[in-house]
Image (cartoon, rainbow, N blue to C red; front, side, top):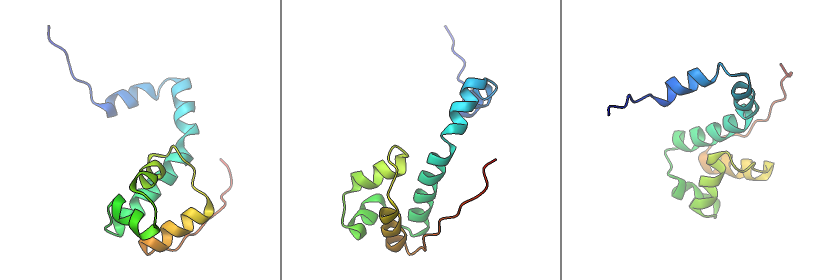
Amino acid sequence: MSRKLVSADALHAKWLKDAKYRKAYDDLEEEYALASALIEARARAGLTQEQLAARMQTKQAVIARLESGRVKPSTRTLERIAKATGHRLRIVFERAR
C-alpha cells in the first residue's frame, strides 16, 4: 500500500477554503503575530531562548511558552524582552478591518 505525502502548506491551503477553518485561523492571527514578533526580536539579537531567559532573570521554559503563543505577556514582560534583546517596545493601535 503506497501513501502519498502531503505537505503542511498544501493542507493549510486546502483547509483555508473551509469557512470554519478560515475563521478559526483568522481569530488566532494576532496571537501568533505577537509570538512571531517575540521570536524575531530574539533571533535578531542572536540569542537562544536560554540566553534571553538569563538576561531576563527567568527560565527558558518561560520564553518557550511566550514564543508558543499560548501565553499572552504583560506589557511589563514585553518591556523586559525589548530591553534584553536591544529593542524598543512600541505599541500601536490600528483601525479594525
